[in-house]
Length: 96
Image (cartoon, rainbow, N blue to C red):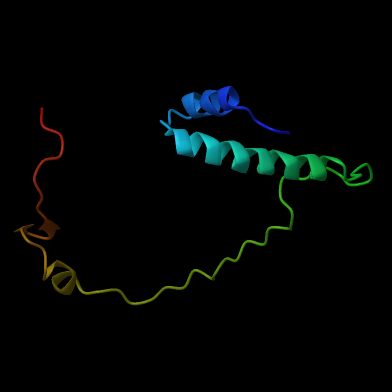
């Protein structure tokens, strides 16, 4: 399928992309080649193949939840720029 200049400009407007004259010519060729590849794929017989959303099975890898020692409070707060007792003190994000 060969795209003409107006179709390329329409696609560019939909994507909110400005194109130079050289880019219009380049994209016309490139987008036409992409559409031709999809036309080849449309010729493949997929009648016996069930529709899928994922080409391969998903395997979720979950590690065991193990209890491990954590940092001591003083070590965790050692590099805090400002502290208020046992807490890191920061500037207000949302002010009233």
